[in-house]
Structures are given as C-alpha cells and as structure tokens.
Length: 472
Image 1 (cartoon, rainbow, N blue to C red):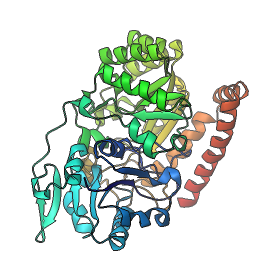
Image 2 (image 1 turned 180 degrees about the vertical axis):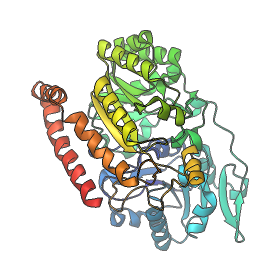
Image 3 (image 1 turned 135 degrees about the vertical axis):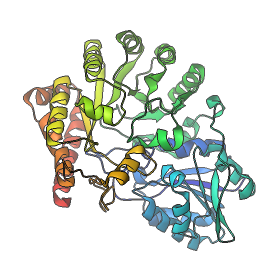
C-alpha cells in the first residue's frame, strides 16, 4: 500500500466540509459533521491516516509539512472550497514532487475535466463512489486500469469506465475504527444534537427526487442501498465501547425512514443496546413507525420541510404534501419526538408571498429548532440545469470569502438581495416569539447542559446575523 493521507483541508473559519457537500457555508452556530465519506476509504486502506483540519482548527501551516511523509494524498473537495483546495494541492506538490494527489467529492465527480485542467498538481479525480477506487490507487494499480477515475495522459484527459454501484453495503468496514484512531470526537458538535455525538451512514442513496439535493444526483443515486440491521447494530455497539462518553448516535442517511420495516428493526436493536439516537426523516412517516422508533430510543428527527407552499414543493419534486407534513409533525409532538426542521428560501417559483407562507407554516408546526438556507444550485443537480436554462444563475460564488452563504439565484419575481435578506427575517420571526422564547428559557433553566450550550449558541447566532449584514 502507498502511504496514504486522507484530508479535509483547511478552509475559511467554520467551514464544515464534512457535511457531504450538502452544506459548506458558515452556519448560524458553529457546527461540524463527521467526515464519513473520507473515513470510509480510510478504513479500507491499510496504514492510512485521516486529518479533518477545520474542526481541529488546523491551518495550512500545520498540515502542509505532512505532505513530505506520504505517497498518496486524497483531498475531499466541494464547489465552494475547490479553488482553495487546488492551492493546497499545488503547495503540497512543491513540498513533495513525488506525491500523488487525487480529488474526491461531488464537484469533481460532475466536473472532472475542469477539475483536472485547474492544476497539474491533481493527478486524478475519482468519480461516483470512490471507496474501493482509492484502495486500488493505494495498492499501486495503474491508473488506466482503475474504474471510476479520470486522469491526464500525454496531455489528454482520460475517463475510465464507471465503477459499478456498490451493492453489498455490509462489505464496508466500520468508520468508527477510523474515528477512534484519527479523530477527536469532542470536536464535532451540532446545535440540535447532544454532545458529544457520533454520526455515520447506514445506507446510501435517496428515493426522493428533490431537484436541489446534490448527493443523490451525483454520488449516492436514487436507490436506497442499505447495510443490514445486524451490521448497523454491531457498529453502534462498538461505538458504545470505544466512546462511552457519547450521548447520541445520528444516522446521516439522506432519508433513514425510506425503508420503514428496516428502520423499525434497527430501532428495536438500538433499544436493546440502550442508546439514544436520531436520524434524517421525510415528513410522511406514519404514527405506528414513529412510535416504534420513539419507544426504542429515538430522540430527534431532522426533517427537510423546505417550503410551506405546495406549488414550490411540486416545483422541486419534493414528493411531500403540506397536509401530510402537518399530520406527521403533530404525531411527533404527541410522541415527544423533537424535530429540527430545515427550510430553504429562493427555490424556483419563490415570491415574497411564498416566503411569508413558509414562515407562517414553520411557526404553525413549531419544530423545536430550525435551519434556514438559501437555495444553492450546485453543478450536477437538476436545479443547476434549470437555472442555466432560465438565466436564474448569477455569476456569484455560493459563499463569500468569509464563508457566508450568498444567493447565487434570482428570479423575475424575486431579487437575489430579497432572497438573502429573507433568511435573517425567517430566523428572527421564528425564534423571537414569546412562546418559542419561553420554550428555550425553560429548557435552559431545567438543564445546566442546555443552559451553557444555548448561551454560547445565542452569542454565535447574533454574531452570524451581524456578519451577514456586514457582507450584504
């Protein structure tokens, strides 16, 4: 095996590159997801090391000297971070001219040609799922014999045949081994999850066809390929042994509840292990399944509501109905399941009136916490193609130099500035209500843990709003 370093490189302060290319802007409160997509091949390549620079607070100066110690460097990149990642690769090549450098991630999967043309420092890019692709590179297999990569030969870009989609998900080793070996789990925290937490995937792919969602359209696909319930429970049991301080397990599958029978099976196994857990869910899970999950340790669901306007949901092919989402949310409230609801402003068809409808919808269903994002058209998504075709796309980066998400879209019915301003308005009107304030204050006074967290997060939230105003 080549001596291999997997790297999520330094970027702007607060960059959360571990979030699977779905959200790489500075968040309203400081948050870091696990770099699971890098940890998975790191678990396969013997003797490798994973460095996740942003949550460790590592600078280029901290990481760059390590280039001299390795033969293969694998960099996870994204659309917002690509330019800075290329600069790092060029600097690493100067430190070690013999270093082979490969880029992975949705951005290079969709744009392999432009990625390779960006710099001679990039020796190859891995398209689609890259776990076993990287292992073959590390084993020293000639690049022209490795499925799923693109590289330059004699001045020409060569695209090898696609690698078959991974079907046997149980063939993947546990990422928790890499977490234990290379990461400090206390570095990772999310406002709505207990701390410390651990997250990993129990499957890949998402049946939903949301036009804006990057990962299923570029890497994971629209078939939900899953690990067996036994395999998942075994990794959770191992995580309990490795990290007794962990307070919550989060399953980062795009829609864990897509396979309800399996979700219930896993829930029962987790209940027997006595763990608290959370997952992503679509707003259509029936009461019976919710109850099984709640009775066996489920604490919270991360739910993508996106909009409170049915036509916008239809426009983005969300596959959900407002009335069903309301009933689902009521069921969660009845069962005591907390919800972190995510919403997006600036989707196709958005107007000031539809933004108002979404704000009113969010207030009426009242998830415990929310995240509001600006619609982002990533290359490789249906939304990006629509934006190009309809001239919605501005010549504007997805994030500012300081990491603040900006609107790269605008419509005849809605300017980019109106979209940008709507985010702060949404947050203020949701959280600055007497009922919601009372709810948060009660949480704080009844729990020293939440008291300290909410005070810190409140300060970060107001700082986030100030930075947005300054960058506008």
